[in-house]
Image (spheres, rainbow over the protein chains, first blue to last red):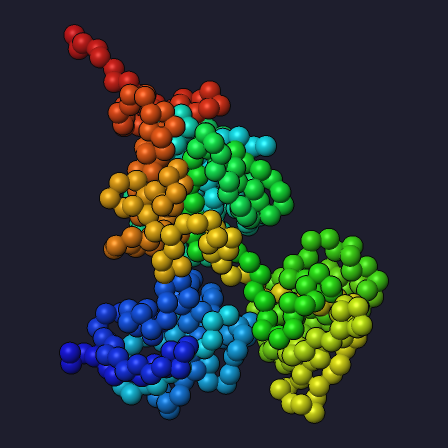
Length: 110
Length: 355
């Protein structure tokens, strides 16, 4: 659909998935991963998207411009494991037109 | 041994509401929860956050919802085993069950209702390769008895409230307290952050930031001897700190845990149930309700948990009293008679002639 953007997601096994993510469904990146079942249910989005767990942590591989990190996300990442400079929480990244071409890799499960 | 009709594993909203629906059927309930307080995720993760999809409540704080549920079930006098995790289940000859916790508390029930949500909340363990070898040999993920640390050298890792609060507390108990955090910023209550700063300036807390503990070194007996702290993510700034105790405090995360080994059919990290009837699992007499179960079209919503709990209690009643006749009665008609002798009922209409 024309409201969709193309996003590339590398799963925890290293397999690459290219998916269409709708921009008109109030979805975030974590929910895209769940809707395409790229990570097993129960291993991602455990807190439901409140930036209260780090199960949706991913590494941003493209230079796509993303929404700025808010305090809650920053605080959670300060306590998460396997954190790198390009770590973000998928649940804090809303799907917008700007994400066309975004490439991320899911961080390992804790 | 604790005896009850329905043993509920998990004291979140679904588990709590089960007590009410069971109570209307005169069935007694006892709840087990790994957390020290009832409410599950609502109390532990987001007590101050609003929920907008509880029918009849345009907006309710998660913590207030739990308080209301506790009030609603009070007269049914539920028992609680808190701070303990359900570990094993044994089916008895009479088809009842004995559930034992990790602390050995035994519960005997005719029916078991697993309302375990995402699982039991366990401390998050940092991914240090050999950390498991030192558990109970100097490494602990929670503080049970602070006296253990008297006059000892302690290193705490983490940046949240528990890391801050325990660093403050242990500053007066331990001989040496080191707090290691990955950032310079802490996200605890402001008071705690200020207090840690004071204690740091007084030399009572040794604060190392931004830093991470990357390695644990043991002595010949396999006991913790030192931790390797890497500051600023620079190999040249590594510090080998001799300690007696290492306490990583990175909060809690839910794990399905021992319930996963009970012989229940598991799919997508959840327990498969019969959603056409009563949310029973593949083990007759064991039900799974709320976020812990799965079936086609499952939604992990509190309101769905309430519905599942209600149907499950009807089935539990029939299982416990196969020969008893019963039809559902509205609370508005029948009122609510508690086990504590209280009765709530709708006021009777007044019939009076007008002259």
